[in-house]
Amino acid sequence: MAKSSILLGSKLFMERLETVGDKAKESLLVQAMTFEGDDAGSRLIEVMKSSPAKDKRLLIDSYSKVVINDHFVFSLKYLNDASFRNEVKATRKLITDAEQSGIRVQFTNPVGILGQKYPLRNHKKMVVVDGEASFLGGINFSEHNFAWHDMMVELNDPRLGQALVEDFNKTWEGINQSKSIETNEGQLFLFNGSKSKKLYEDFFNQIRVAQKSIQVISPYISEPLLGVLRSCAAKGVKITIISPQENNKSIFKNIILSEQQKGYFDLKEYPGMSHMKAILMDDEKLIFGSSNYDLVSYYFEQEVVFVSEDQLLIDEFKSKVIAEVKEQERCDSFSPVATKKAAFVMNLLNKIGGLASRTILRPY
Image 1: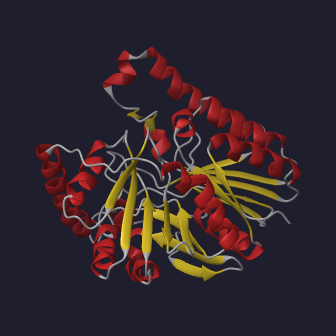
Image 2: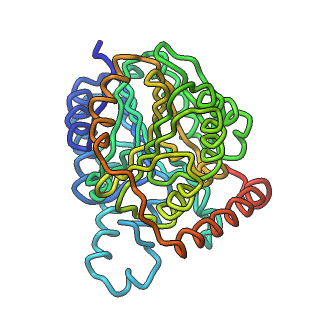
């Protein structure tokens, strides 16, 4: 059985997925939030078509019905931009082609008639082959996602594979789980927004036990993780946050720059856009998966996260990922107006999100 490994970038991920998919016998199960009818989406469908697996299924969040290439489908851009209309049509056509070739496709989490359930997304990104080989991380199937700095982690843990198959099947049936599972290689967390409040506390306790250092990589960090990091820093733990220099959601960049002024962490910027999500503690524990550790995930979204103490995997992560940013300059520049505004907006959204997730926007 192949060892677990870090697949840095979409190129390595897809090459490995093609290899594993070609050897599949029973099942090839793919779940993503974003799927588009471009080269990235087409390549996935070709991998699935060519696989000899008997059960080939694709789960896509309904986000991809209303947002293509980071633009809303129902917008002036659709009316004014022929190329955008073609992107939307290409996505629909690719899904139809997939279904006609024997791949079963299903959408999760409807957005509602007027988009009132838009925040309630299934944010999971995972692939499971024959219930044995699993891929977890942050990569979605669209060209712009493929271009971003990101990773998937291959895990060859049959117990994990079976747990993910069960979760995939539950999601297929419209059931979202909130649970943690001990596997051969670590601990799996399946979150369901605010319905997982206690489970999130168990997860954050995995971080609170850090003694020396915590390194966080994510483009969209906010509360509640920032509060956990502050408490760790107060105990003398060295905190480093690695965030993209070019963030596609500028409010999160300004939140981190605002938070940096409190002085409890060093901030390093990855050049360009990074979509990676990972936490390394004391060089002994690695957390990765679909979650950005932000308030949107915490209140509204389904996520899959894995906690590993596999030292070989951790050493590979350090040599491939941490080494990339080790020499990056500490970021000290910021706009006082923009950062104050971002902090105010995020504080307001935190309060609104907490209330909404208990009332009108309870997770699916």
